[in-house]
Image (cartoon, rainbow, N blue to C red; front, side, top):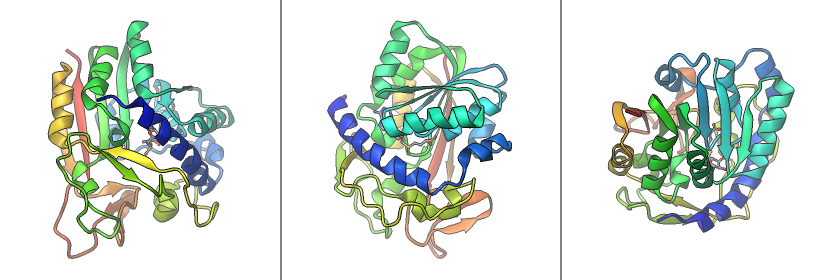
Length: 285
Ligand SMILES: C[S@@+](CC[C@H](N)C(=O)[O-])C[C@H]1O[C@@H](n2cnc3c(N)ncnc32)[C@H](O)[C@@H]1O
């Protein structure tokens, strides 16, 4: 069931956290001006050649990946519900000289408007911590399907829902099968950039905001892989690729994760392997 009221509550928490997150990233505009980008090999491979492609980046946060998509050839629109994130993204676009359009909206409202205006895109991209904020996975997938041009693709790379069953210290806490049930987190969005250090600050890590406490709670929605794939197929998209990865890219989601090459974070040594990320490539007919 679509719960836009919860999305708005979450927006307040994202506004607060986004300030803390960006406070840790050294001169991001200079990083982009000097040719940097923030995409990982997993999404680059699925995105393929983007030269001249029209792209919408859903839940783009502060726009770093959006500008990276523009840098490798796309004409990109970034959409996010957070006021702070979208104003930061617009400023970063101006300061870096990389053009992109940023729209502040609930993703469901933007998808509905785009469908009504008969807008069609070559690529819909969403990644890293996106789907847990969506209260209705089937409506999201239908919205995505509607705005994809014939033969064009959805690229989704996200943290695996199996990872969401753990607390920070790896204790088992949350159900895997929850049918989109909302779970409340009193502490709101935390400062996961501070916890991840250099891994989430490719322009260089700054101390920034110290001991960040978010006064605004959030609610997250747990969707299983079955529910995500069923939503994508139910929306009429054709699934071409699905992959799972035993690491996260950049984000230290849990205690004692081991950092390896390329900013990949693995569970502590001695743990059995677990899927911590997945990716999905699906096409419009
Ligand atoms: C973990 S961040 C995603 C980061 C992203 N992968 C990037 O490129 O930086 C999740 C984002 O989802 C956004 N969000 C949460 N609920 C939303 C909604 N209903 N509509 C649009 N954006 C939403 C948040 O504001 C936040 O920026």
